[in-house]
Image (cartoon, rainbow, N blue to C red):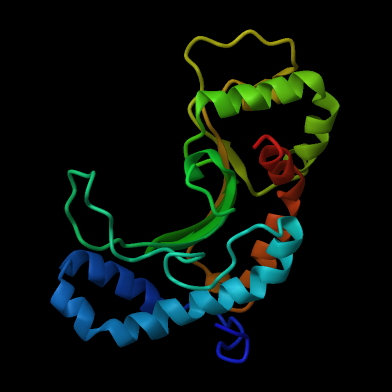
Length: 229
């Protein structure tokens, strides 16, 4: 997929959100196949354009990111993987972009994401489900150079749109660090996310600079996490 083949991102449409809602409610493969062209026009093409518009920024953050604007690469599938789930519904009511390095151990690799649903959208960066070994490596890195980590999370004090989330240990781990660092180190895994209600930004080209600014702000922390691997 090249820039010549895909137009610049102009925004999603309300019809795209309605499609996600309907395809999940119907959960019907035959209906989806009859409406596959609508899926392509309403969702696939805008997502491809968004990936391409964000590619220069993401490549500067990490040249090893998977940046191909295709389903199963940077763009999620709308089909659910039901092999290991009790929920056997065929379709999702959301789609997303994930910028990450190609890796079999993807749950332990930090990644960026942007997701839309019929009722909200969100974007951020972090771990899907970091292992204890990964979090121990982060804690050891912070012990060795807490000043460097403070610089990496400095954005979080400056009116950041991102919330820090992730399960914390019920019994706190021993730590000599201040509370501002322990809110990170006392977690089993973590991610940062900005949740937004459906608004005009989602339906306009202004989404690109919003994501661009947010993703760049997270860059120093992403690089600190990526260096652990």
